Length: 451
Image 1: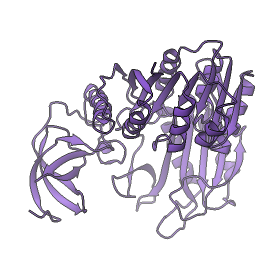
Image 2: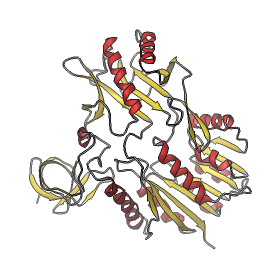
Image 3: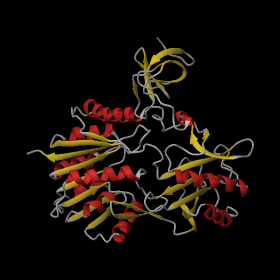
Image 4: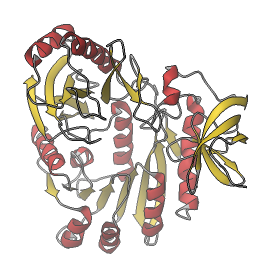
């Protein structure tokens, strides 16, 4: 049976995709259906057919799940990246744990029962960084919001269910000022307009707010008045930056920036350390769950004051700096130059002297330096693509007694563990729900060298 566009089927949700989209099958052919929960039955219409799967749209539900809830903000069921907004949170957490176990089993050939998943105390309003595009209604009213799933159509939202509520308050005032100063919003089709997006970063503990106004041109008029007005209305704003991006691109930030107000950075605290964040600094977007993650990683590592520690893929140095409190010596390796600079600044401002950061590829560094350092503990916190082959090979050759793997992708984690378990034994796995109401989950794995 050939599936065609506009075909109508009754289907049952059997799973979710890696992005959290509902999955059903017709004659074993996968159909991806937004807003479909496992166990629900719905009449759907096929909207697009690809070689290996099709996209479908719900016409009506014929059977709804008892796990379905009314979304906190109804528009979110249409948004990219917010797939679990209609699913009861305990079921979301349960699914994420099973997702990790299944990836380990199916991809890595590893049968392991995950010890625990740390659910969020509050699964809403946790993001300390938001980036929102500007749009405009026919009436002239300026809007911000998020893109409809699989489109660049902006769904207007007064606030989102994930962003810090202080950030949403600031964005609302920015919309009003965009109208006041008659700034034209950017049109990506014609590459015209002045204001493209706004980024807001907030610090959970220190209550500082950074606003980054992303414009197409450097000579944007009335920015001084814009800043004065915004700070007067929102005194929580401690710095305002103009980022200039004149490229036809989906890349958010351009290369050039101007600090319009304040120091150009904000600060945040994490487990007693102070971190300085620029517009481009990496920092976990969920501060409270990041504390849970790093606390557990360090507890499970059981570092002593004799240990020499490697933090590969070290980013802005969070794990390295926390490990340095207990270790004899810590080395951080990171390929992104700006992240290394941030890590060095963070070490200096916290008075940490037993850590050194290198700008290098993790695999190349370990291959070259393994004989110069006798690493007892290696932390890895790679991007979604996981560990490089060169790094895995170097790690197996160096054979440190203990590895702590922090993963943001169960599939690449399973692939890497399949290689590492040739020489290492898994002694602990637990998960942290760092990104509630989305499909993503963080996993902590402790490995020890086989005797």
